[in-house]
Length: 211
Image 1 (cartoon, rainbow, N blue to C red):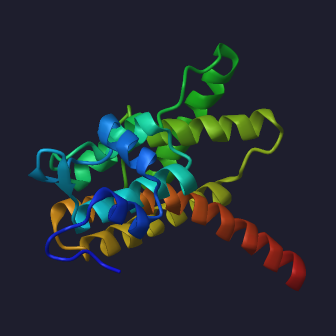
Image 2 (image 1 turned 180 degrees about the vertical axis):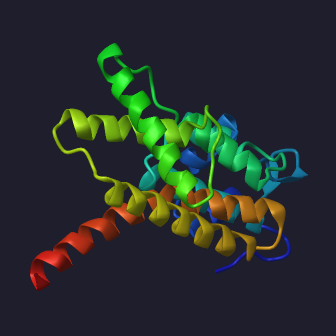
């Protein structure tokens, strides 16, 4: 069943997306879903954009593990959103928390290492880039645990990340409209993290089975 020209009532929207009516009402109140088209005093109709938005929200919450507050900031209500908006908001959402003093010095060292490796490929990021800072903190944790990556592994991380990001951006641009493009990129970035973790585990499984 799809969305007809007249739109769907809430019960139909619920049935098509497999999202309960109470949850849809909650998403409307929280600003995760834009209001439908009013057709009467207590009647609303919902279209394909509501179906797509509900599927995006469920994917981000159920599979991506984001909080309702984070999803609300990322997808907003009915306002326009662009790819830069998505990337900026994700950066703020995933920025690392305060670092204990004993980790800070090690993290600073790894932040410099990240910049050095990026520079070899002619790339550079801002000093306050949240993703680079988060990566440096993870690398610092690896060192403190006695498993610091060598330059070859660090280069692999960075080049793999750049390759995946480029492929995600290419696919998102294929969506056409700015808003749909941004939503597709958002889902790719958030769920792609989960997919990469699974693909990495699969790679280790294959290495073990074929080694």
